[in-house]
Length: 159
Image (tube, rainbow, N blue to C red; front, top):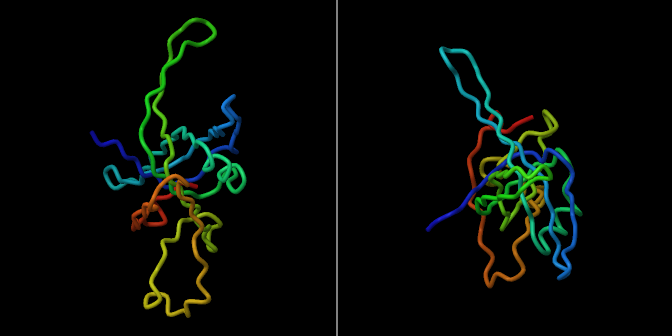
């Protein structure tokens, strides 16, 4: 079976981190993504809010560097959670367990749009002037997976 999710968006709240009795870090937050489309020529927007969970060292890195509004690309797996609330009612939700993340730069023009990395020939800037994107790979992976480069229009990113 194949279960992989890639999301680009803004965090909707600050990271909430806690440590399990085993000492492993667990961090939770949510990400907002959007989709713009037209119905009968009228522009519409659909925003999706997804809970995300970080584990281990990636939870600590996320807590240290990410805040509400931070742009991030997360790659992980879809998870179905079930629990019983205080009133005894069963509840459930889907969330994403993050396996890799990449912190994205904010746009200069609007203070928050995603800017995909461009090659030097596209930007006509010397390599030393380009700032690298920060990313985090799981420490237990033998060889870090590369997050695929995604060509996303700035209008497709929420906020």
